[in-house]
Amino acid sequence: MSTKKISIIIPALNEEKSIGKTIDSIPVDALRRMGYEVEIIVVDGGSMDRTREIATKKGAKVIIELRRGYGRAYMTGFKYANGDIIVTGDADGTYPFEIIPRVIKLMEEYNLDFVTTNRFARFEDGAWSPVHFVGNKLLTLLFVFMFGILIRDSQSGMWFIRRSLLNNDCRFMGTGMEFSTEIKIEMIRRAKKWLELPISYKKRKSGKTKVHWFRDGLHILAFLVKKKILDIFGMMRKRIL
Image (cartoon, rainbow, N blue to C red):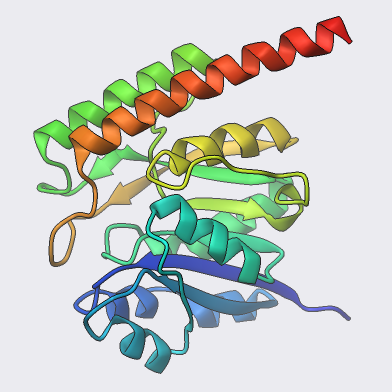
């Protein structure tokens, strides 16, 4: 009998104060009782603190990826992940890893290929700055308008992906924060069944966010425009052929 496997990918950069608690919050025992083998992959972007040491002691597989970028970290993590289902989330304690067993049960019961999450549903005081909150809302509205995919949070970083969606012809363009938008477009287009779930988004436990909203917001906006233009040219090419 083959063992089912879950890979949990966590990008990290100088998160020594939160990486241990983040890994501890993953309900490994509950997942094992469900019949899943669990691997935790921390993709480290060149931390100068004890992030890698702590993650290793907690049982995670640490992959060093010195090429910076949020998307780059995930693309590297995907290469090393062996799970039938891949789960993602940040190392700063903001995402509720404790919900993983419940979401996996939903995926099993309803045969879901992809689950993304909505941080706007419930969030702690201080989880967002006003600029971040408004910026996320505007980017989500643009996402829905441009691509016709009805979701409430285009930038959420917690996803549940069946490995089968990430096959050899799956290519990503975004190496930065725009990857969070791109993964949703590509996975939703490939998925037979998908869902967006509300989650409780928490205040960062320590340190400063890696997101620079003016710079990253412009990159995401530019990506949306580029992606839409490529889609239009792709449709025109299919019609011609």
